[in-house]
Image (cartoon, rainbow, N blue to C red; front, side):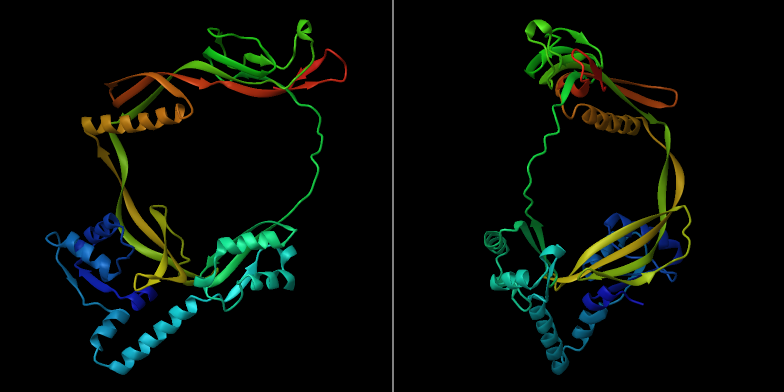
Length: 395
């Protein structure tokens, strides 16, 4: 049974022999074409995908291809039946015209849902039957904010032919006084201090000092000679940090080889409601991947329809072990090393990097030793008891 989108927008059927079925599956995966190979070794693809698949298969395997089927093929074969053609054009025109209208206005926040809010939106031009092309959403949102003392923000979204209005209610409150918070700034890792800027608190280290992870850098306890007391320590501490990352590529690795594909679920979402067309409820074996393809359907490639199609495809595979050459091992290790290095130095300024590698008995190992400048300060709270001169560190 052809798919609904194939019946509407057209499709062609490719047929191959049984021995060429794996080649057809791999070609579909390489090209990113959403189609399944059936038990009779045929697959249905869209006309534009058919041209790509034809170029991919030509000269590699023997295949046959049908003419365009579905509604476009029907129209072409009956192009001289002018009455039928006129009826189809009239139906498409009515559908496109209706899709440009607002069918419903839905308000998310129930506290605002009432005749007063709907009347306010209607006066501003948003009501059932209004044309989307005549609605300026930005101006409508601004005018609704100005007209109401209870709304703090508003967002109008179009989904298909339905207008979804999200409103935020204004909350007036006074900031609660939860008491003072006292803290220290400690080192997040081993480093050599390069620069220290204190906004509040007492610095216990200076530039050039070597610190360990957890050492106090800025104290929230003010010494007695400076007046004493407790504060929330704040400031930035730049440290020179030394690090090393490494990655290893083995001589052989397991890889997936896809052998077949099958659609196990098809659903359509219309105006937020989901309709299941196909659902395969049988148990799936472990040697497969499930991939979801989501697409917004359009008419003639230009008019976006309020219809989203979701296809779940089961890709069966075999696991094979493949040996890697020396160049490939080096390239694999370099890619993994680069990813680790970028993660480690994402928030730092790189000063120097030294990279080296060597072949081992089981593969190839590559490492990088680096030096970076970064903010190593981490704030931890301290609790102060009611008794003077006593405190309990929380960290």
